[in-house]
Length: 434
Image (cartoon, rainbow, N blue to C red):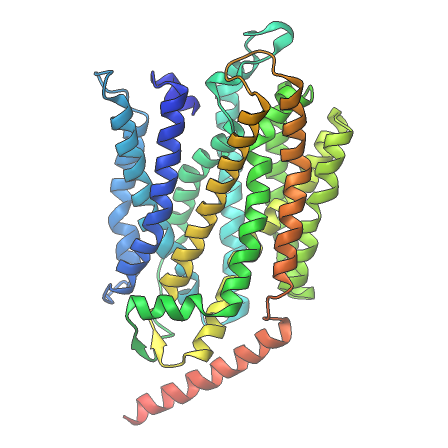
């Protein structure tokens, strides 16, 4: 929003660009997944051509998001077009990149290690980008537009804090993807290619996938609510507006440091236990910030939030390959379905972001939020406290209750591993005989 406002697009148009672009990006996930399932294997695999082919176009589309065209009347169409194009191209990169985990190794422990390494690099890239961009925009946050340093958020909009991080993720995270991807191996190729529509029906009937996706859908909505309203909460509900950048950096540092900790924890106690411990950790601290709004508590909450953010980033991507293994055992004669799992999970993740944005906007609208005003009604501060405290807790509790239905325990995961090894051995033996 801050970018589009600087480029002479009014706040309503900027919001429309972001909303339509996010909706378009969500719709492209299953579409890209469909085309990936139709792709043929090449010398560098089935996924690498997608990542290599779209990379230069992603760079060009991202450049034109920051380019100011010489005309003024058609700038809304200009940025909407390039933002949708960027969302499409980044989807063409991210979906095969996410599904790449299933092809790197057949060993569950190695896949978990690769996932932890990937998420550590992504959050580390976000941290570096946040530190650099934070220094660039620091002056904008401290300008005396209003009395008592009361910053006008009209130029930043609802969710500007999340937008800062998300834009960095799209760039630094993209670079970390490109560096970390080297090669793929075709070690899980038994069975026949299934049509996309049949694969979609089978995937959507697989109960472990539904419970995992639904659980983290609610958890993602909770995390997104905190992220998208944190800057407004610091500005209008508590007097922490001057410390926002440092608090965000603290959250990211805590997340980077805690990802290896959660990787050790899930290996020691199991993924489902790690998910419950990691996600519930954020609830008492966010409530504490609402009722005890001071600087020391804010930094304590930042550290604890980083722990939960790391768990919410690592655990679903670590548990999803286990769901794919379980599906493979239930459908041993099918192949080419990995992109369906990953593309629709990315779709639901973006859907969660859209829900949080819509809920936040409607709640603040009913509360009387005045875009660009130096002071807001008391109802706005109260609403922001609900969006930061009560609402995330309700969504997290709902998600964890659904996660109770997730059937893949550590015993089931070990059983699936042994069964897959046996199935792989039998398949290899039959191929050698033929």
